[in-house]
Image (tube, rainbow, N blue to C red; front, side, top):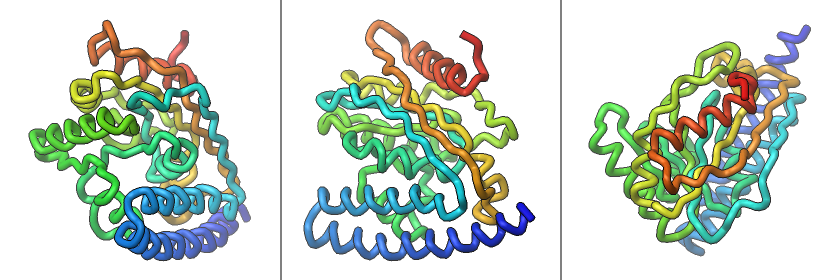
Length: 249
């Protein structure tokens, strides 16, 4: 019975999800060309709100534990574990005051209504994982952008989604964070612990797992001053691991 419910509710959600992407793709184009970047950002924020709250159609629940004390007058580098394509939307919506811009693989810049357009227009670092030099240049550009604007960057240092059934993390890679810090030396590094998204879509988009529980927890910031990038990334991974129960503290 539960499996049948997964298929039925997944079908309902995916019809809704596809409609949201198409409608907000059009809204983004109109906003960007007709009203400018700020209007485009608002359309992206609301697209991701609709994506996130749409999960209630599957009986699932989301919890976002924010930190309202995070500064708005300096750039932030959000460092998160990566379980699913659904990790992203709540970060965009609930942290919208920080204007999060993502480090993303370049393949996502085309072919996905709403999502691809935003990646191209938001200033995201679109990296070719087969071309390290290109990736460094793109991430450095993003670092310079957040330093100039006091916006935020979001990076998943695992490099790809974890396939562990327990959600246990892959080792965090330092290079991307190090490049961001080099170009955004005043940035605060803030870990985000993501739980439950992998079990929500363990086999891709269909079927989803109905009545899932997913959470995002923004953890205390890490001041990079006086630390090497390796130490900062290690501290971020340990903080996320402790929150998720993988590291004893």
